[in-house]
Image (cartoon, rainbow, N blue to C red; front, side, top):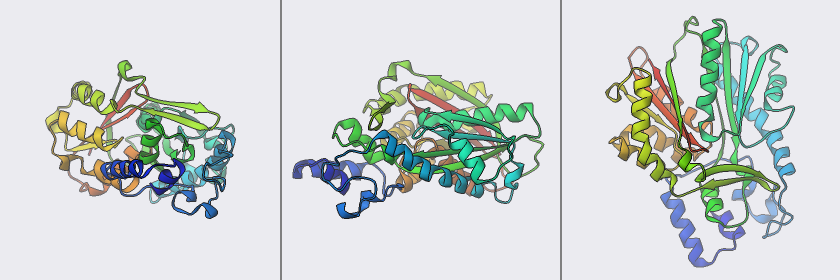
Length: 341
């Protein structure tokens, strides 16, 4: 917040308004690979030591930092995920997910080299799909496992959102800068023949609300990636989400009454509030979403996996449960899953 107040050269009135927005965000802490955001100007490592940030970091510099930090962060997430399940050399398929950095050779090859994975490993990348991309990658992994009983698929979602800070104090830039954060999460998916504790994938369902395609967007520019995040997104979600849930559950042969765990991507506090309202859920039903948002902010694609991990840790082994998950991204795209225990 203090970084934004200074860089945007805000008046005292505008500083108070920004502070109010921060307090209303539902976020207490976020993480970044850039140390500058909580240090004095003389200690900055990424931005030039000038109050106007000139010369402003180029897209090339941002990708240098992405390639420096994203691979190691991804490897850490994968190792934590598969620990106690399989050694890294047994991974047969690797799916990398990111919308905050791209290069060729890319993150998939960087992870493969750092972990000394088999040279013939199946690799795929899900790029630039935004906050719902983890679910899209899960759909790919599920299809792989249904066609190959020996498949051991690892998905890693790694986003360095804070690399793309923009210095013009537009509403889109302010909203992005107080909401998004950096993070990584991995998920291990296998065929049912792999007899280990875990959740079962029942179904997936997705829809695109084309009327909201201009309200959430993510585009490249010479000074990083630019986010459009309209204040109308929560209204759009509230208007259509109940119907989406009904169609998704019907597609999977489930009912709303059977859902015991609501795994909702915390795209923002107003979005989670809107979902609680439209589904007539008490806020306690979405406590995992609120909690992850409070501790980490919106990390884009990894965030839904952070929520799912917390729910899995709280779930009592051996008891039955139905998990309904949903995430939203540019388009306006809405992806869902149903998992069971």
